Amino acid sequence: MDIKGKKVCIVGAARSGIATANLVLKLGGFPKISDAKNLVDIEKALSGLQDRARTVIESGGHTKAFIQESDLVVASPGVWREAEPLQWARSLGIPVVGEIEFAWRYCRKPVIAVTGSNGKTTTVTLIARVIAASGKRVCLCGNVGIPFSDHVLREDVDFYVVEISSFQLELVETFRPFIAVILNFSQNHLDRHPDMQDYYQAKKRLFMNQTEHDFAVLNAGDPLVSKLEHEVRSLPCFFNKDGETSNSNQLAVIEVARILGVSDEVTEKVFQEFEGVEHRLEMVRLLEGVEYINDSKSTTVESGRWALERMQKPAILIAGGSDKHMDYTPLRELVRQKVRVLVAMGVIKGQLKDTFADVVRVEVVQGGLDTALACARHLARQGDCLLFSPMTASFDMFVNFEHRGRVFKDMVRDL
Image (cartoon, rainbow, N blue to C red; front, side):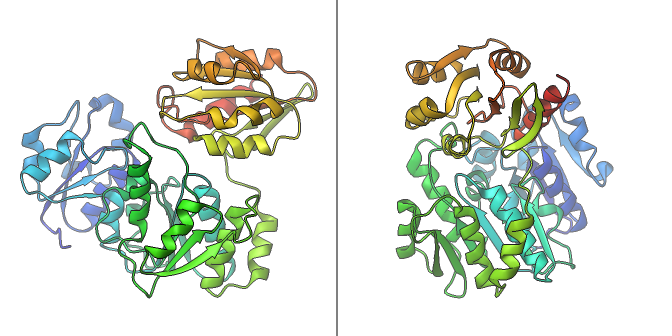
């Protein structure tokens, strides 16, 4: 796609949007950014533009006139596929793609892409480290917090390892990973996807352009994932074949490493040295005999299950945030076994109380994370662990889970 001299409108001024604008600049195009937020609210993001003077900015809302004066529209992952600006573009015959698709069209190196409802960040981090340990040059990017567009033109890369969300897959057209991994499938993002089937169809788009020369790495222990064997054109390769899910992320990494010809010894050494990713069961502090654990990466029911299953001490659980229309009842028995007190906060605090009040003590707080932490600390006893595992997003309070986790850690360190 030659965009030299073309006007490319980017909808959304977050990290991926700014990265897309910078890629457009490098390719000789003219980026335009349209964002619903006021200019003062996106000024910090706009400071990342490599050439502000060549970038046209629309803030405080989207207009059809701004969209129509474009040759291409690129949507940031946070923009719904049926958002009004994208519908305007389609009605005007202007092509619409997502950031991953746009970057892919300039990619000249093999891509290993990982999706799933849970475990993506840990898995892509491990795959990248295994590839580096084997002596190859690797770039880790995508939904992990480093936009694909920022790095796609690099020459010093042998493999791109890309974390992919369902949001990013909604608008792919030609994206074709050499190795496509789907870790699992469970309820998530039902505030954006109308139902589970729509969410599942978005995940399946990861494989739609693969050929018999590519690989599909599938979780044999997940019924919905394993049945993709009969739908993909690529070569199916399975992990978790014995139904052992405790290290399913590592099993997926081993399968990818074997496809790439990396020895099990190299992979095992990486596992032994791995200390985990930030915001995933991250030990923050031991205070007055209580362990404070940051699990802000927990944004789903299943990620909350994963965290609770690993608790060896009675837990004071802080959970809650924005409403993703998820059902928490499958956790009732596990919460009864592992949690001494549940501190519920955010938009879904009432739902959490209704779901768990008859199996565990639930304290509902009306304030933010600071109030929830103060309540949890007051209830904690020596020998407990205070686990911050929200099990949902917190866009009602924070920019993203990283911001949420950093705030929690700062609060804990200040106690």
